[in-house]
Amino acid sequence: MAKYVVFDGMDGSGKGTQMKLLEEKFGDSIVFTREPGGTPFAEEIRKIIRDNPLAGKSTALNNFLLFWAAREELQHNLVVPALKVGKHVFSDRGDSSTYAFQIWGEEHKELSHLFNLMRKHVFLERQKPDLYIVFDLPAEVARERAMQDASREKNHFDTRGLAYYKRVRKGFREFAEHMPVEFIDATRSPEKIHRSVLMALAKNMIIPELALVVD
Ligand code: TMP
Image (cartoon, rainbow, N blue to C red; front, side, top):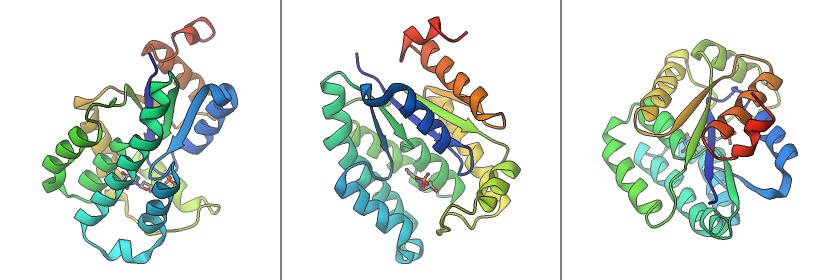
């Protein structure tokens, strides 16, 4: 059975490096994608959300809905078709981000009910993620790294204070109360983190054969 795995974490957690390592290891045998984005239309929505300053000025509800709009598009046109033909899907971010960033980070708890509804509708008759792998960092380290990363184009997500990062981390922890989440200590070297990711994929029966090569 094909599995759907979401990789998530705070900006600066090294998630990008880990996704690259996984792509190098598994290549075309797995469908790699990202949120927001992953299909032509969802990539257009990504541009609006991330790069258009008007999005930053819009309401919390609008931003929340835009993330879900991109997700619906991705589910319908990429995730479900891939799973149907038996291919695993590994996604860079997913609904765990909406929960951690919009509901917790930006303190819009009033959207929790809608979050559950959107989840039911967007994942309805389809497949919810089988596993979330969250690259975990102390808020101080995450913020420092995000600020120092000169290669990152600064957008309106990159100008937050420490309290915001703390809330986001708490958001991921709350998410894990109800969902299948594996936290990976992202303060370590990329090699060690990669190994932990492979172990998590084996342990959670995403790619059980990996248990033979990592222990
Ligand atoms: P990234 O692709 O470089 O990780 O950037 C995506 C940004 O969008 C990142 O700052 C997290 C944010 N985001 C949300 O706030 N909510 C979401 O639901 C998703 C998928 C991403």
